[in-house]
Length: 311
Image 1 (cartoon, rainbow, N blue to C red):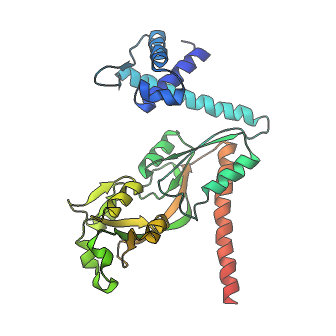
Image 2 (cartoon, rainbow, N blue to C red; image 1 turned 60 degrees about the horizontal axis):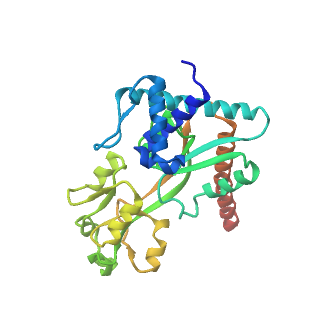
Image 3 (cartoon, rainbow, N blue to C red; image 1 turned 90 degrees about the vertical axis):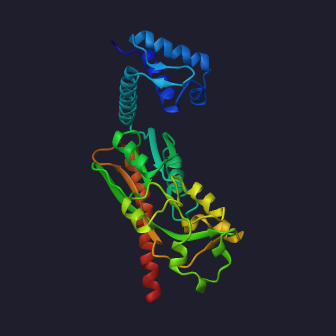
């Protein structure tokens, strides 16, 4: 079959429904009513001659052929977007989509330079449409490998072949407890590492097996996938855990958290820019150069400051 503009529209609606997990959930993204979305999916099923999904009491479920059609749709829409950017680049202007995924709880870090890069690109190349999403590290790597996003920023214990990693900066982590926790009012000299190890901890599920082994996770501990959820458990006073130091400042000032004495699990994680190896559109090249350039300038500034101090 020859694919028409109308077919592309139907496929994009179908992609939105699949990504959002149903018709009603896709309404906000598409700006269409549920009956209209349903009519579009029915029209696509008629056009292709296959049933794409089951909708009923058990909710939205893709059929086997629906899954195959969605894979084709995603690949087709991505290729069209890439070729559109290439054609636009022939005019000499920077226009196109730039999709970036970052781990959660980074905006509060003064060393996180992505907002500055967004500002620079918006000022210098307003035709670049930047999208930012928050994802777990593993999801960022998977989406990069699949070509769904252009870049990711985070700390990645696990590596995937075919991706390039550039170190940006270090994010320090320390152990904290909430105000209701017994250790909150205990003097530093009374808090040993053994006492801390006896407490219930809350860990991040995406940490590598090696790090989990060193932390000796037990059944009473809690596992979460977001730092925000980890923070809530720690604020409850029932758990202690590692948090990025930059994220806790307001809670320390409000006397809701306490930084515990140094523990062997304290660490500095390396935050990285990760992207697919190989050729990239000009829009991504501009983004990468500006982001890495900011960190190189910062590093050079620190060296100069050190040299001045030594003199």
